[in-house]
Length: 144
Image (cartoon, rainbow, N blue to C red; front, side, top):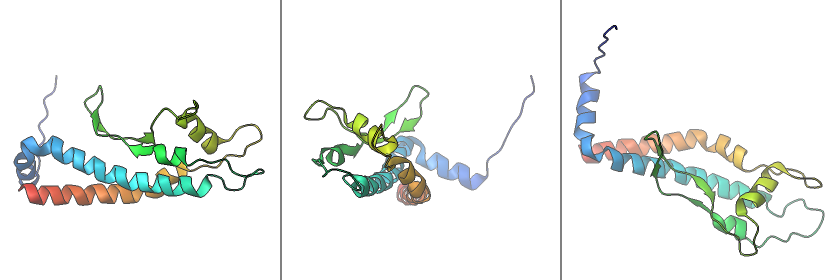
């Protein structure tokens, strides 16, 4: 088996070693910053499509929009930290918020799709990355 050694720049090694035990805390703050940007974009786009362009008067109760939120940071099986934007359950009258959101996003027989999730993800990607980088730099400076 071949052996390979890669040396990181001293400046980067120094920054990483100073963060040390604070890495998990910083990761959570960075993910939270990106998640909040995406959550705001999804809420905005959801509000724009709910009850709009319907054949019949809208029966929206606002429950779907109210159930939209951000999870806390969780560690998955592979050890990766994740944060999710999604809908809390259950709905007051039995249907699932995820089901209602899916019908809005993709439509159903007699109901045209009103995409809000995928366009929000696309629109917010650069801003999420920017917010996460900014938060990392803030945390990096404050922890040094």
